[in-house]
Image (tube, rainbow, N blue to C red; front, side, top):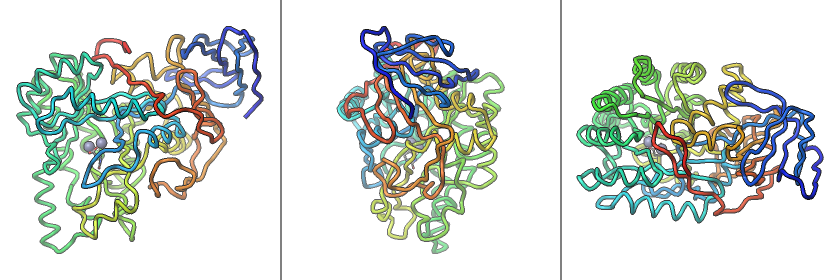
Length: 473
Ligand code: URP
Ligand code: ZN
Ligand code: ZN
């Protein structure tokens, strides 16, 4: 890192000088001035802009902080609790260049949505080192729940989550629930995020695996054939289209599902989708060997052809967002499977490696541009989830959530080099570029040269706007 100059009595609190500023529509050289947590000036190089702290970032990339719209910190799930809590997960996020995350407040049976949200918000606010929002997971549909949706939207949570699976967890929404929830969401300008898999098809294939005497890890994938996702995606969007609700397919994993979303979008229907690095980077060979069970997640890791198709969809814009579905379990927790694929805690660590994976295997591999990276990880998530232009863009007036990346610096991924509370990563052994030298949240440097300088509990709850409006929080 280059020299820091400090000056007293200057207008700006912080100046990043001489970096390559990357936006979704282009990259240019310039200086960024930050005041009171917001971007206050963007000037041509050599402008003379100085701050109380001035950092020369010549030769470095300056991007908006990434937004991970799909994480599960300390979630009780599959008989255990995911290993990253809001503190460890948010610190790991900051090391990976993520400055905003959206987690889930999932209603339990009999619980009011407002109670679920308040409970989760309190935990996250006390512990998170980065700004956060919440989606509201609906699991107990009744007239009170329907009426409450407006209150949730008005409280800054304009996105709901429905699970088409997870009967045992008591989370599953049937077609009737989905249909009515879509109706209400449409009238409120809210987005419904859907985990789309068909549980009945999964039951059939699970039974077949068991009847064949197979409980090994690869059955987690084989028992959830590709069409168990694509059928559910088609059905979810079709049901949403009756009322016109905006629908967002989470962690989309198959090429067939991606084609379906593309077709609806091409007809002008507001159907959007995210995929995750695991569906781009990994394929069913991951299940080979003694560690195969570590890769179990829902939907499962698919096939080489799916990865290639999804990379194309991410590059051409037919998938709008890449998030992580970060849900980490340690090796010990994954060991709960005891040789039976039905008992593996489902989920993978990922919040820290999101941006480096996409920079290395997306941009550096020539699959898409840096601008597209910013669209996928910053601008699109902010737009789709009511945070734009407060977050996701480098613009005067926006929050000064910025990351500084040395495009030449490579880091080997090992459990020791990462900060997630997890003793493995699916990407261990690989070398990645894109881990930021500096991460800035609302003008405060929270990571610098491998040191965490932020504070647990400093992350703010973000009130988000329903679609059509701008962020108000
Ligand atoms: O296996 C996964 N993805 N675990 C997290 C819960 C979910 O379905 O997103
Ligand atoms: Zn899910
Ligand atoms: Zn998830």
